[in-house]
Image 1 (cartoon, rainbow, N blue to C red):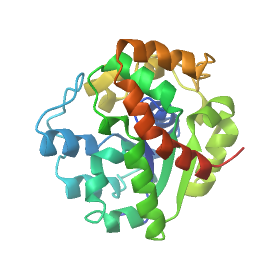
Image 2 (cartoon, helix red, strand yellow):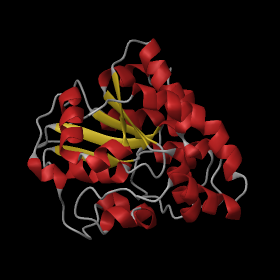
Image 3 (cartoon, rainbow, N blue to C red):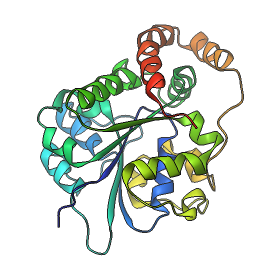
Length: 252
């Protein structure tokens, strides 16, 4: 059975997207998928997984098979939710146009000083593209150009006001709010997190939306940049895209 709409959370790494995914998993009425286009991007386009990624053999890797999976409602569930990265499919948007028209797209962003520092801690060799914000902006712009509705929300907004943030996201997606989305059981690992569980320690040890760091972003970034000087170039590249997306983000 094919749905008219599925809900996509388009994120960049270290933007609290896994916590949002965890929230949707608590609904009980959603089939949830964790970065399904990662299989196409890393295993088909580049032929190698990223550090800490242990691919599941049975997961689809073909671009269109993945898209079909994400608009197909499993028996007994009412909705489909997936979180993914725009940079996985940014060069495939025209090929995925019908798919993009069938889903509800929400973009999640976080201050790149903090997301880059966090990413560098887990993978010091990540690429400029993998920082993700440029691809998000290009993806967002493509959707707007094609008349496809889109929402942008900041991780900082969700962190400080999770209930109202989730209610606004759900209203945009056409789903009712369920209070159970605000808390979950610590340590329970969803099946499709196992292949990359090293990246999700914060979500695995949390019981709800944690407050993001209250440390000064400049101080956090400078410490990371001292160890990895090229992060300064990454920040200068992605900051303008972040600012554009931030200007489009909902306010609560």
